Amino acid sequence: MDILSKRVLGILVVLMASMANAQQGGAQPAVEMQYCGMKAGRPPLEYLRFDIALRNSASKPQWFLFPAALYEKPTTARKNAGIDVIELLSDSPEHKVTVVHFMGTMNLQADGAGGFKGVLLPAGAAVSIHGFEISFWGEAVSPLAMRVVTADKITIGGIEVGQWVGKDLLSAKNADVTDLDRAGSKSTDELKELPVEITKSGEVIVADALAKKCAK
Image (cartoon, rainbow, N blue to C red; front, side, top):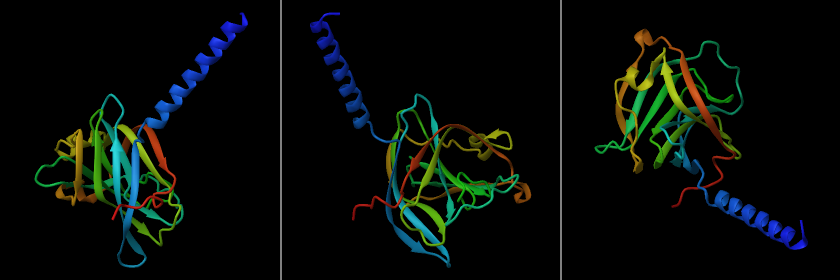
């Protein structure tokens, strides 16, 4: 290879690397969280409020799953942990977004205090939810790591969650909502926990959910 060809090849490599970096830099994250403040509950309980932005870049519907509650420190995972109640929260009257609160002892992360919350988004969706609440047992301090699981499917007792609860849980492709109200619920027989299976497709780690503050 002559000197000119080597130079041309080198320029092409640099250009391709620059284009790749630009594409990565321009890509919006799948999950963004802004901390809006805390409401005190019965000590040591705190209710943390967030504005969250979710983007599904996949070619199919995806669940975005957040812990419903957290402890200050990791705890031992409970054997046979599951879910006994599902509560639905949605914007009224449009119902563009549905937040599914899975209640029980199942955790998504080691410091989870039981249960998780999920939003099912269609392919290409971009949704913002204001006032998304996560309970915290103790005093929340920065950095507060948050593990968000993405999943293709969730089953309860072997039944797909939408079928189990008897409602269409898919949110709109584009929405910006706040002040979600209770939109329904279902509990298991005798409140006996049922096993939950999550077909995980990935995860997003928010290194510090308290770092970015909501605009006033």
